[in-house]
Image (cartoon, rainbow, N blue to C red; front, side, top):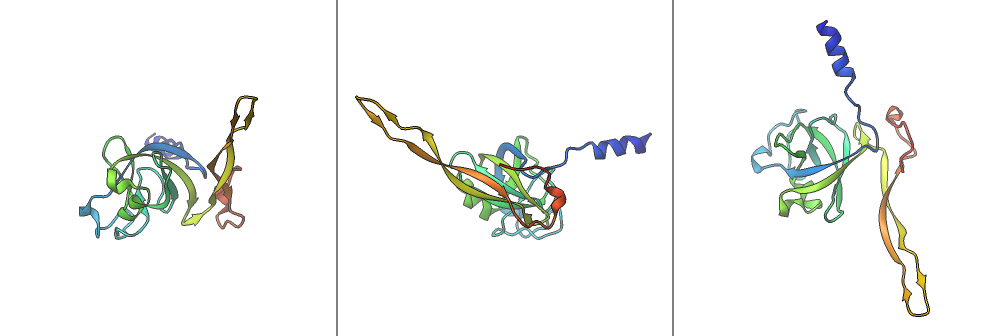
Length: 169
């Protein structure tokens, strides 16, 4: 009975998919954690782009985007945490500096899974789109406004094809 319960508990957990998004609050590591071992037995360094997440598997590549300023960085999951309620990811100092998190301390972020097992599978690019169409009138002319939107395309040559299940826009 116990084995049956454990079997269904382990295999009913949702698996992470390529392109999966989540939102929450990000923080960065305190100085006391650097030069100590992480959950996967690596030494935590300030200048690496790594992070801690509670459920994503180790070596998953995550794109972290600061919602306030739209800056983003790709980090690798190598630790477990954060254990503070309401936070979803802890970043190293270098990654926090890239998205201007170091100055404010906490920020709302969007997480997107862009690769597994140290292999980047989704390539982000910026595409230019129209925000407003031009309007013509006898009294005024409104110019179009162009904005950049981030899009993703699946990399052409992927070693781990088992992770690619559907087309990502």
